[in-house]
Length: 183
Image (cartoon, rainbow, N blue to C red):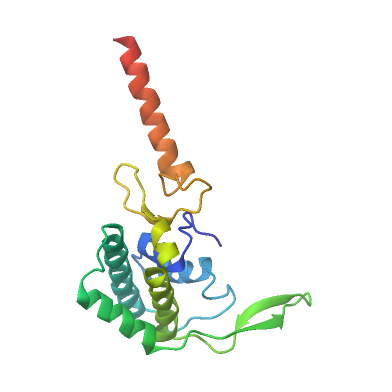
């Protein structure tokens, strides 16, 4: 399981991921590695979805505020801190799979507050890390609001994904040049 978009941080991946169903949340939790693929999540429901959507909104608001040089609204910051402190992220452990290979598992079945805390703590780490904050960017693609960490060599990355938004921009630029050449 993989994500179509990797922002460089789990909290920014959450901010970019459309969570419209509990199944989409389940997929996201597994694709990010927060929950191993074989870990059951029988309690995952619309309540979990609402709570993760709330965290997603807080993270997006606070990260965009950082881009503008601000700290963000106090209620969002308070909510982020509350979620970060509300649970203990699930402890990983190594177990053998059916072929005898070591694979990652969780010590106990994760609950919603524990998984929210893991993502919220990642957001706190991002927002309080001066180096990471200088790498925070918003995609320059038309109609794209994804946030990501620019880890490119010259810190000149412009798009969330070269394959998605970057390709769209290059195609649009080519069409503009072609149209201008015909005139």
